[in-house]
Length: 500
Image 1 (cartoon, rainbow, N blue to C red):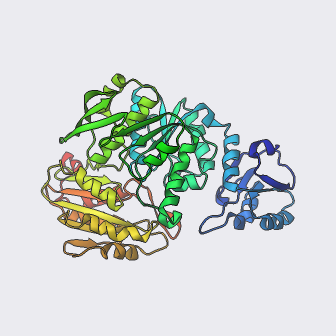
Image 2 (cartoon, helix red, strand yellow):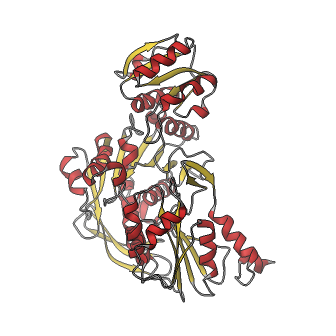
Image 3 (spheres, rainbow, N blue to C red):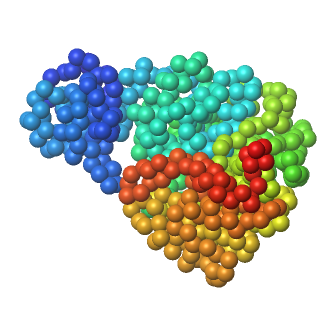
């Protein structure tokens, strides 16, 4: 196989015999099999060049990297393997993976969603509206990989935006289901690390921008510039004009068609006169100067923004407004976003992915229309995120709940106790604040503090099926602890118990 046409100008040198064929490509030596290509990626904590021997022993017949000395050293030990020195392994991996999967992106309409908050919900809303409009649409992001009907049982290589080798595999699987559109989350780190290299988007969406991932990007400006890269590879931009973080940057620089949405400034799609009920939100949706009375089955200002972003995307893709209006009442969101726990019947229990000070603040505004006696909230510090966000979590929740449980998500290389202590340091008073290091036990603690008629609000990772400890993913599932508690505490009525 002649790699020069595939990798364009990435190749510097290559040594060793050209393999008869490559069946797969991977950056993880543990997943390499016979006739595989191993891409050496340098990470913050490890360097793929250190695992070349393992990859070759497992069947790799081709190795690509950017460490000339390491490649030369291993080439001498493995003369039957082809070694290729490239300028940027991440870009080379994306180009090669696309080729091996027969360029599935060329047959798909791609929609990319970026921003600090709202990516997962906007992605779900767009997927819901397009599918209900007869456009078979899949999605890729924090909620996993979905076809037009359900999530696919595929492993996640990253929390949100997959590595390119996995991403093109997902796109290939989606294409095989005769799906024509895919909406995906584009994170700042994913964009900065070229995980989306080679993709071109029909629509790029901007939700909002506030400081996040500064432990990685170091400065807010670098964080913003990473986000802006999505719009360098898009035909049409959809922009939240109410956001001061980077909306003006896009409006000033983008040369293609732009659709704007918002509530406070003039926009192509604007929401006004917002009213909440127990069922959702009513608003006046103004498009082309004409107002339409609209009901959305969503709660909270931030989710209304997410919904009108999705509506704007659909309009940008050519769907008619009259057609969309008939489908808004059945809008479906992602799991773990104000997700009701149906097993509990005598009190209200919700899971929500809120895990930053701003998303927690938004969440408290969201639940205002709900009726309950007392509010029990579980909040988390994130071990794999910057420490500076932990104490402000306490500030965001203090004084807003009757009981507060503090725990840790994804401790990473820290102890869960240390992560919890960082959050606890942000409270002015720890009265009615309960530190519980292990998340599963913290959920059960929150449930034990509740009584009939209360609202139990469980925030944090919610939908994940793992936790990250010392760099490794360990199996974990919130629902296991909910069910266990219900079995052990018959005084807390559940629908399951009632049925028996």
